[in-house]
Image (tube, rainbow, N blue to C red; front, top):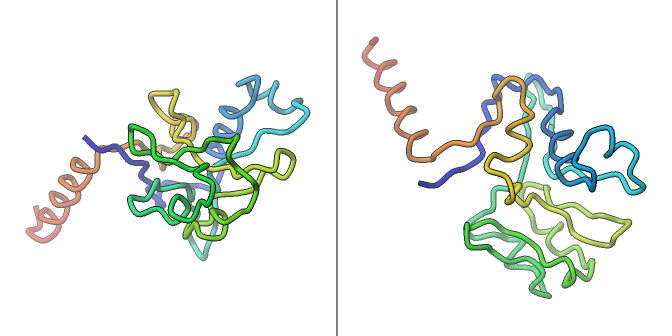
Length: 162
């Protein structure tokens, strides 16, 4: 079973709850009120962007052929046993090569700590914080094979009028 983050842009209302949930999860306190008062504010790893008529969370896809991973000159970025791209923060030299090569623009800089910051898929949680925080379920953790099966079923129903 391959789980992936899935966005239904029709359901996203641009509330940025996913951004807040992500930042809180990556805070020291792990609480909203505690995170607001932390000396260095926690950084989000998901970004809600808006275009003409659409709002949509943009996040790391942990690409199979990952430009950020392939360009990391120090070995800071690595793929863990679950297939997620993570980082050894002690190896990051703040060269920002990963920031420049990410096709989605979701690897960012923590200028206070001089580290690259990216989604770690909330590896210590069963469901990522961004998914748990989404009030409209626009952001979901789905099984890719099941998602494809459902889409095929909807296609057949639409084509046959069923």
